Every structure is written in structure tokens, then in C-alpha cells.
Image (cartoon, rainbow, N blue to C red):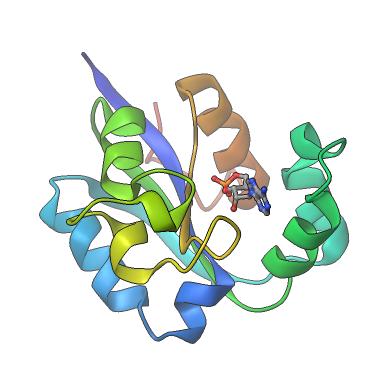
Length: 143
Ligand code: CMP
């Protein structure tokens, strides 16, 4: 185990539910540290770029429309084994299968409106952090 960073997105459904504060509290209560954080909104084109790995999936159009449908909160989270730790805190992709204590159980609705996104590996975390944050926004924060 080592100190890692991961990229979190609080999605438009959770933002609309006024759940941003509660989700950030669940994150910090878990021991993860928020080292960068901002509210933004993706265009459809940006969402298509962010989720390019899913472009052949049947839900790609729905996914990119949903992710660009409203404001989001993007954060860089830091901590021991942060990628796995945050994925455990989020719960499974399908909110209907998410156990008690997870963000998706508390604030997700289904497989699409699932409240949050987290990077699936340390390598993808670097790519996803750079997608949302400029070098200046990360200045002094990331090794
Ligand atoms: P996320 O972690 O953001 O990564 C890809 C997203 O695609 C995933 O969360 C889900 O919200 C979404 N997704 C996965 N499977 C489906 C599906 N069958 N229908 C709609 N959206 C999906």
C-alpha cells in the first residue's frame, strides 16, 4: 500500500439532490483527504472525451447526455490506497446493489444515476485528474 490519488466526480443527479456536502463529508470521514476540488459542468463533447473508453457501449449517448446535464463537483482525493478505498466507499456501479454505508446506496438511483464516479486505477486517476485540473490548479499538490 502507498499514498495514492484518485479522481472523484459528484454527478449531476447528486448535485441536483443537494447532496454535495453530505458526500464530501462521507469522503473526509473515510479518512481520504480532498487536495483539490471545484464545481464545473461538462459539454457533451467533453463528456464524450472523458468516457471515450465506453464509446462502443449502447449506453454511451445516454451517459454523455446525463453527465453534461448539470453541474458536477470534481475532486482529487489523496490517501493510503485511495483508488480502492474510494471505490469501496462508492459501492457497486449499480446503485440498486449498493450496500448500507456506501455513497451510491445513500444517494444513487440506478446504474446511470449513480451519484459518483471514481477512477478505476492509479494510472487512470492521473489521466482523469489532468482532464479536469490545470497544472496551475495542481501546483504544489501532486508529486
Ligand atoms: P462511472 O463510474 O461514471 O463509469 C462509467 C459509467 O457508465 C458508470 O459509472 C455508469 O454510471 C454508466 N453505466 C454503466 N453501465 C450502464 C448502463 N447499462 N446503462 C447506463 N449507464 C451505465
